[in-house]
Image (cartoon, rainbow, N blue to C red):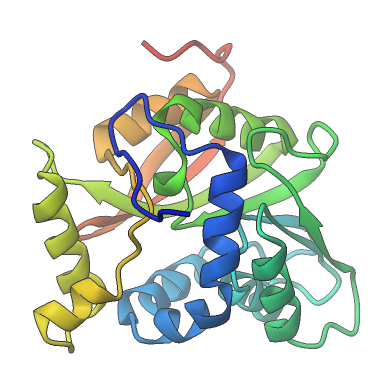
Amino acid sequence: MSTEYDTTPTADPGIEAREAHWDRRANGFDTDFTQAPVREQVLDQISRQLPTEPCTALDAGTGSGRTMARLIQGLHPESDIVGCDLSPAMLHQARVHAPHKARGSLSFVYADLCALPFDDGGFDLVVSTFTLHHVPPTQQLAVLRELRRVLGEDGMLILADQVQPDPPLSVEAMRAAVAETFYPHLPHAEAVGLLSTYGEWPLTVGELTDLLEAAGFGCEVTDIHRIVAIATATPGHAHPRGRQ
């Protein structure tokens, strides 16, 4: 199966192709992660925003479990934490990398972010790192609406993701910027070689803010590191509107 995907706004490789792609990447993904210092910088920033009281938390798109591990370490020990992903192989890696948790619960759930198998308002905290830009544009609003649905009225969403400058870069220029940002210590050709060939659809900060508001959040961008943004969002009181 080809791993080259169309990156046009109407493209959607389909859930089976997306699952197969991340299953293939699972064994080596954690090694890639540790070579990208910006990922650890993002997790450091997220850790400083975590609530101090016991809570119920969702790691949406947990991947190999690096964010999950930080949640286990940074949240109150009695917190209940769930990691979900559409890749069984990634979920296996997340289980392997999860620190021991003596109190509270820890679970891993196979799920498509467009249709989460959780009750309305079941989480106090939802965290998603470097996931939304891998979701086809036709489904990004649906994902954010699902995150809003499962978040309690007093809850918080922390979303970190790749973002496009405004005006957006070309596909080639964006890949070069990603390589330089994530792997600044490597020669350019080697850094580009580490990037996924899977379709990526990063939003500008303005587009991300608009989508979060359309999904029913009030939000602010709290940190930008070149092409990486961290948004903190809380449930808004306005009725979620459709994407314009």
